[in-house]
Image (tube, rainbow, N blue to C red; front, side):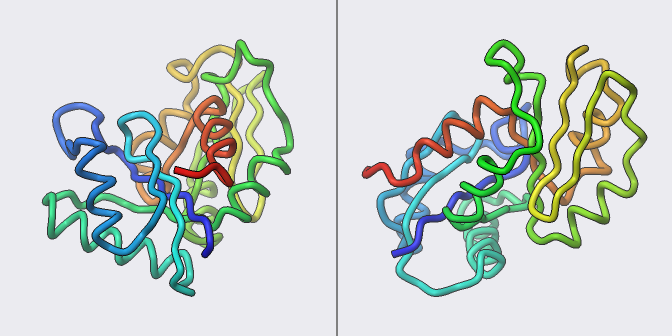
Length: 181
C-alpha cells in the first residue's frame, strides 16, 4: 500500500465548507482508503491506498465524493507519502520553533498550478523570503502573515488552486507518515 497525504483548501474555516473529521474519515474509508488519520479540523488526512492511481486521480475521486456526500466543492491536493516527505525534508529554509506559524508551505496539485499561481503573486518585501521549488513554495513572514502581501494573495483568490499549511502542521503531517492508525 502507498501512503497519501490529503489536503483540503478552506475546510472548516468560517461558515462554509464544514465537515466533522469523523465524517471525513468515514468518507475516506468508504472510498477504500485505509488507516485514515486526520490532523486538526481542516481536512488534513494521512492514509494508505492499495490503488495505483496518480495523486491527481485520487484528488479528483475525493473531490467528487466531497461534492456528492457533503456538498463541499473545494480544491483537493493529494501527495504521495514519498513526495510529501521530500517537500518537508528538502525545504530551502526551516524556521525556528517560535516561527512555525509564520512559515507557510504552498501545495499545488501539479507543478504547473504552482508555477501559474506563484507568477501572479506580488514580490516579497524583505525580510520576507519566498522560494518556489518544483514541488512546493515556501514563504517565511517574520513580520507575521497579516503583514504580508504574498501571504494575503496565497491565502486569497490568487492562490485558489493551491492550499497552504504552516510549518507546524506540515511537520506534524510528516511525523504521521509511517505511523499506524
